[in-house]
Length: 229
Image (cartoon, rainbow, N blue to C red; front, side, top):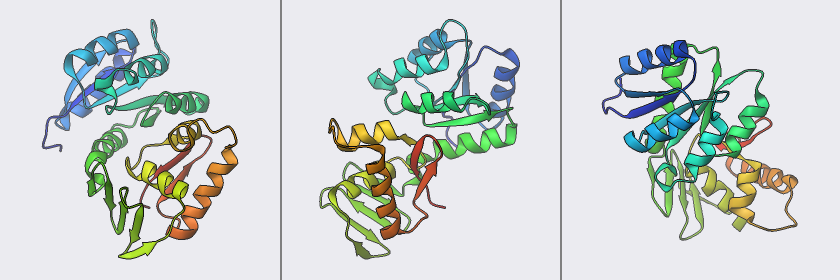
């Protein structure tokens, strides 16, 4: 059970879904707030400042994709965890969700125990990196020093090219967060016109060759995330 009463906002137009998720998260010790559509979700979020927002995709008035996009543009929600509820047939929606800033998704039909486990894991991401500061990330046996552009694995120095380092630091700074190819290009290569998806694949392959397979996971059809396997 969570020892700190973190706040979770659930945004869904189905009363049964709201009730099911609310019951299970309250039982886990979270403060839970509800909204019935994207517009209402934004209004409630501004009032309660949740630590995590669960958004259904298909809703009246404003869908979850648009609500997420608008909230990500508001500074106070820049680092708020946002999770989508998706049907297994909605892979295109998952990709759209990650493109507007979603941190994760939970597949329907909802299994309460799996849901709670996933939410607990997401909210632990802030501390899952043993130490994450503005300039250094320490996760397990891996130390990434942004100021010095140095990486150590098990105390041994690992030599990375500049873009390899920047890509690793981006992924490791938020363990578990899925970065789409578009967001990786924007963050690492900015407006370079010569970079393609193939460039990202090559850099990921080089990171795996130098660090092993267990750090960078592929999310099929979407992008990559840092995850200790």
